[in-house]
Structures are given as structure tokens and as C-alpha cells.
Image (cartoon, rainbow, N blue to C red; front, side, top):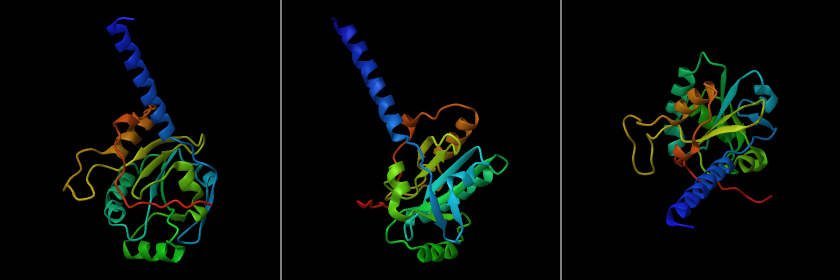
Length: 198
């Protein structure tokens, strides 16, 4: 096999490997029954009326999750005339529903925040940090996108304006019937969500 043939084989393998990793990164969402901070019970079936649902990983006291709220609201408002649901869930063991409700009141959070008791949702989705968002097809249960809302926030930096709008772009992509290229999406910045063994 000459060097050119070896190069083609290598590039093909690398492409397939990247695609496999991307597919593995996007999981499916399980059925759930979770209570939000207002006492309302949520199941995946509850979101059947939407074409897509966006879930935001919330955490009490997390500065990045708090600051990113405004960007999340802006995305919701931009897609208000689309059939898309927006919600949140909290998988932190230490965050009780009362603490979540207190945080929601103090920061004017006008989204339902479901408490992921037992961290089943976090395990299924592979949640690692707060402020990450997931686009889900509630009918097929497919996760179509996961990542940060935009590139405005970092661990030591905060831009005045975002330059990349990952969630907005992903929503426009799925609404057009196309697949999001997850290889272009960076890891989310946020507070660590510690996952405990059951």
C-alpha cells in the first residue's frame, strides 16, 4: 500500500471515529416523572405537543448558570412563534426543591425547574456541568444537540456580546430538518454536577 492509499485509509478511519464519538455524545432521553419547583409534575409525554424541547441544566448558586439565564431567555423569546418548549432541570444532590424555589424567586427564573431526584436524567444524558442545554425531539426521544448556549461565558472571561450562538443556530438547523454538526460545538462551561453511584 503506497503512502497515498495509507493516507486515505487513515482519514476515512478518523472521520468514522469522529462521527462515532459525535453520535455517542448525543444520547436519547428516557421517560421521566419529575416535580418542578412549583410542585407541578413533568413527564416526557407532557411535552408531546411541542416539535422540540430545550432543557437547561440549572444549579443553585452557580455563577455561570445564573449569568447564562438571560441568554436562555433571549433564545426562548426569539423562538416564541415556533412550537418549541423550554424547561430546566437540576441534578445536584444538595439542591432541594425548596432551595431551587428560593433561587428561582431571587433571580426571576420564569422556567419550570424540575428536580432530577436520583440523577436518573443526568446519567442518561451524560450531564457533567450546569448551563449546558439539550435539544430533544420529544416524540423520538432523540437528543439532537447538546452544548453551551453561546460563547459569551468562560471560567475566567465574559464577553460583552457573544460571537457564536450555538443554541440558536442548532434550533434553526433542526427546524430546517437538518442535523447539527456536533464536531463544531465546544464543551459547555459551568459548575460541575457530581454524579453519585446508586
